[in-house]
Image (cartoon, rainbow, N blue to C red):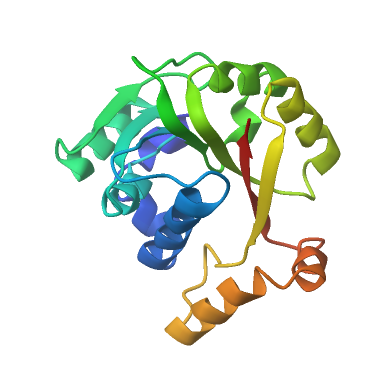
Length: 204
């Protein structure tokens, strides 16, 4: 965690070659993949980092609650969001929001779940509509993750390849093409054998 503490300032700007395009596309999928989110729904973003994703969700009319285990990241997220959202210090394995949320998100952090099945059960207890997270199919067996979600009561799944690159800035037409290729069926699934990730929306 010391790495994150040292890098908290402007984390999103350094992690993403085009943070606006990348996080906007992620936010659009969080809204629409699986049960649709409505204006005013609250999203709990576990492992929120510097809150960069919160800006994209707030811009779409959602309420945002961020949680991170690194104090410096929490401070940076609070600075970035300027009182427009709640940001708290907490461990994603243990944190519970004060009231149920419409959706819970977890990006680039599923490996921090100490017991994945127990973590999914924990999240299901306070999430009304869906859990959305990213999954590298070359790192995790999809069938094992699906089994854990089903055991947690989150057996209704929608998966979407995510092809907008994190570390390369694409021109606008190329971003549009990448998003279209995400819906190309067998071609998209073939690309996932070599790189890219799934976005997974799990619901009841």
